[in-house]
Length: 448
Image (cartoon, rainbow, N blue to C red; front, side, top):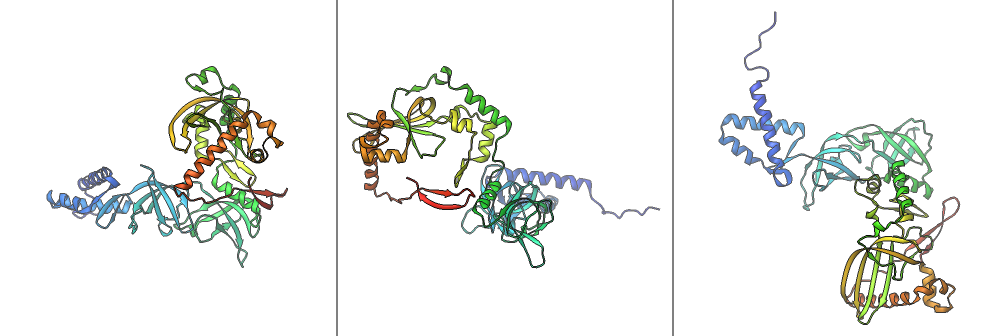
């Protein structure tokens, strides 16, 4: 025979509905406040004025929201826990970006809950002595398939651990894998089991780059951690090839300022393959006219296209040692979007007028079509300035020699004007790393 339930036992369905409604009202109201927060007393006072049951329901609703990690309390303020993405991990902390508006929060390591880059998390603000946004992770909503690089180290018992490059100060236990590795190998590992702290994670090696004492090996590991893929998708490559093959039509040039009659040229290092900016200079009765012409990449890379999406993932071209991982496929970066000599190119130009003292008189920005006369090289132009017509490179630059002289004169005027304002001159020198056939650094020289 079934026992009778005691009076008042179990969940009151009416009370449950009232508490649920109260929880939604709280979260909706918090979402409407700037910073997703407001004083807790505001809710309590309003509930109290509506009667004892209302206050009781409010307190129960708040307790449930605390337990669910949807609301937090700090210094008497109620905060709506916010959805964010983990965007950076350091040795002792992390950075999360609030999905609603892109605001970044600093998260001390002990408050990360073992979250990894790419994870979607719920965060709550914590006390900040300097006023900068700080938060703690209260719940991991969606785990990413984050992979981490580091050095595999063997302890005295023969067990292997991973010392991560950019994630916490504690080592992560490594389990056996199909990828062979040795002590002090620099590796790429995937997390196979998570804990509530980074040190409690368990990982498995999936790529062994080689000995961690080799600079080239370290570079490979860094690139692997920073870039999802060094290559481009077939869709992006096909689109880039189609754009480059199509070339520039009359329709593309329509409505643009035609500067193909001007002496425009590029100046880059001897090993540069992509010329993304060009210059022009003329001397007038009132001073100088300077043109700076940037390849109009936006004409070809449309928002939302596969090229745009992959470029957004990379953010920039990555240059290291003697290699480069381009932001755009070579058909664009070295092709139609490179201001190669002897070819029409679409550009975005800044056209400026200066007086003889270097004061700017006028400027305008225009979409243009240009034609570069020469691919200038720094070392050759420096030799030309030093030797004039006696330089071995004079014939190459004879068509623009006068323009180069004007540009040098204007540069000296602007440098002197900057110095007269008290601007600091840091005197930084760009360097070139020389590698041997084994990718070992054998020299570092100043770039001329």
